[in-house]
Amino acid sequence: MIEPFADDAAAGHRYTEGMSSNPTTPPANAVTISSIAALIGDPARANILSALMGGKALTAGELAFCAHITPQTASSHLAKLLDGQLVAVEKQGRHRYFRLASVAVAEAFESLSGLAAAGPARQRTTGPRDVSMRRARTCYDHMAGTLAVAITDSLVDRGVVVIEDRSGLITEDGSRFLSGIGITFKARTGSARPLCRTCLDWSERRMHLGGQLGASLLTKSLEQNWVRAAGDDRALTITRSGEHAFHKIFGLGTDLIWRP
Image (spheres, rainbow, N blue to C red):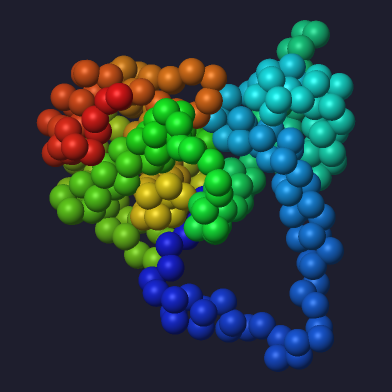
């Protein structure tokens, strides 16, 4: 996930503050950055990470299928991703399940997805999968796409959430609104995860909500069958009951949540 910039000038000022005035002095973590970039930069490994952005733990065989590579090649790539601490593995019996190592990895990958989407246009035809992904998809543990951005706009317009820089603040009225649809938050001592934060959606180029609130909205939508997994990728299908719920609760029009 990436944070939205208020404007180019402000962004440029913010990112130059505190930097060394000596252009010949490289950042202390330059080697680490280049190593991580090299890991993500391989197309097969990028496909593996993209598959894990769906939030599910997958086997090496499943990831090989998603990345269009052989299981042996997938095992080699996974070993490198494990060594780079980009993925983690959990063993259950004879099976090994891989997942992203942390939310920070998901945020970094979503950030790169945004940069890639903003780059030069590629010579390829946008297929049905792209349309579905742009409409609604999972972004690790929360929703992204047109639907997520529209929900975010609705929550801001209704005063449920106040956006300040990269963070979102849930208002008192907002807490009551969310409680009314079955979303409440318990105090989590020692939790470093923000209750509400914003992410720049790579397909919409606008903000959607992440953090605990974003995750709760996805969980609620899945539990109520407002959305369901469209297949093996990250795309989500908006159901008829979802269309009704998103209109009734968030005031979304069918032009924003149309189904194929």
